[in-house]
Image (cartoon, rainbow, N blue to C red):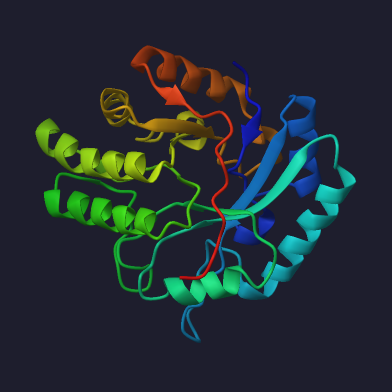
Length: 260
């Protein structure tokens, strides 16, 4: 097939990425992509005094959007630059987040559930655990996030690495997969997980996607310009998708971001 679209790239504003937006876009153009989306870790309206060290700060939002709007215009006709955010579904703060996110032009959101509850009070999602309750809580929160109707797809949906019995893994992750299928949104094969040899993308999870007929997409999750496209990892993801009989959406339809 060959990659034509990536909707998962970050910028230096999240404090753990490098390279300029222009470098990412130029590499995407050179690789023949038609659509390139930035989905930096979203600013969040936390209470005064709380600082989140892995996401964009609220005061950087205008610069983020204005920079990408200018590059979109500059590269118009060559590649379609999209403006998005990777955001958690934190019920306590989510309505206020959407108000904040839509103060400036935004094309889409992807759901990356890095914490249970929220990062101020909850647990990190990306752990290895044989605790069924932990897995069930993660799946419940992702399903609730999907139900808001504002996310284009779920990033690294298999982030929580359940190490207990396979039937428990299947029982809960099948619920997540069925929810995404019912909502008509893809589940991401995450290339950062491939190139960093993380626990995701997990073969068992995507075998379930194949069995249940869910749609998947492929996201670079690029935090460095050098992997803005990451064709070697993409080829591994393609091979897995073909082997498991997955339905790959090469260019997911963007879901409009709106307040709820």
